[in-house]
Image (cartoon, rainbow, N blue to C red; front, side, top):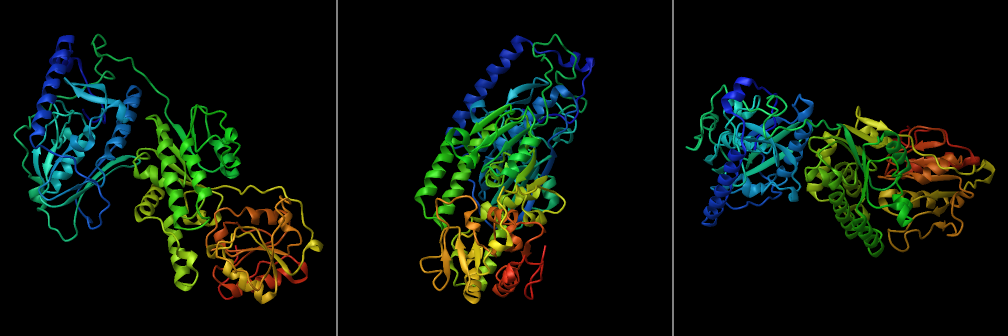
Length: 617
């Protein structure tokens, strides 16, 4: 197999020198390959290389070797489909190399790690170098990866046990400078021994294949000069510098048995991988999609009568769902407590399964992915987003920032146990951070999220609900509504303190998750379940949400639409507007001051700096 070329060169002289393949030569080639595969299989049974395990181990911080090579370079339209196939194959292969640990003295085998590049394992047609020609083959293009692994193994001072050079040079590739390592299942392999414990870091980024070998901090490696002159095995074969690989796009030999009809495929197909149906995202997807695009969603909300997943599917070339995983998530949510680590762990597991199912939509021709934030880290970790433009539909703060804020609040208020009841695993936080860093665009209606990504955010407008206006005369100066739920991160403790201080009645709209008796000493009421709609706003003088984190401020939007004053933190994601007062989080004094002004005489609050640390949008 060979890396797809950076450019193509061919001539009638070269064709004459190499000759065209015949049925006899092709049959002989296949027969020899089959014999070599059998020989390799029996040889490995006697104690050859073994598959190495991957692990998320810390300590491998020293980069001992690094390779960066371009993904996209074909300049002929007929080669585009094969280059897409190559990049897709690289995505599949690096999943089996990334995080793999090679122990001291351990033997690494490219094929033992990657496995056979078959269609059943998700590999597709790319280019393979055979008898001087770049021909279509399942798994074609993996030599770009083997070249990179060979290069970093040399840099890290590894002992090269087996390496084979390409029979033809591909201009611009590692073969052109003699640092290549061709592979062909399973008899042409790349193998090396590690002088110390090493970890492979392999990923497909937007435009590059990046491979690194990492060592433990403080462990010395061979010097750079030793690495550069590392011995190559006796199997290396010299290549005539004048030889160059050819393909049907350039050689002009139309009578050849292998000659292909030039197939030019559509480029720029987008896959929209969505989760919950936010109306803002529904509008965006409807405007951005094209007839050739794909849609992946948890399940068909229309069929299952679930508004949460009712995405408009008309106008897409292909639509797919992850119904089983989504239904399992819904069942788990009903059985688990409304709050706590068990619920959050189950939600993450379900999101991982949904992401895995929807990843099947990511065919080689998909060059752009618009993905829900809930699915993002799992798709990134499994390598599905490499070599593609990525845009993220963001609904909440990044997990790293979310953890930071909750940890800060918990340090200030250790008695509020729900502030520390769950943290996502480190690998998930890291995967999301890496994916967000490399995403080309962040799409969100949330103002605070947008401020975290200056220069690359597409800011959507919140969908304003249709709500009957509530005149000032209908508002009571001693009644406020708290959208909730009653939990520390939504500001429940500050609301309770303000209600006790000002003797307010609190309309509770969400579940009570802080435990029984939390609202003792406060007058509370709940809207009648059958009232529905905007009945919760009846007689409310202001709506308060002093949240540390808030994803979707739907109640606040309804209150503003009805003309009811809103007092909230910047975490609620609302942009500057009339009737909105922004107070700092974890500052009950600022909240009390803002409430006094908002409720006095039933007047709308002016935009005020409430308390010493208050700020306004």
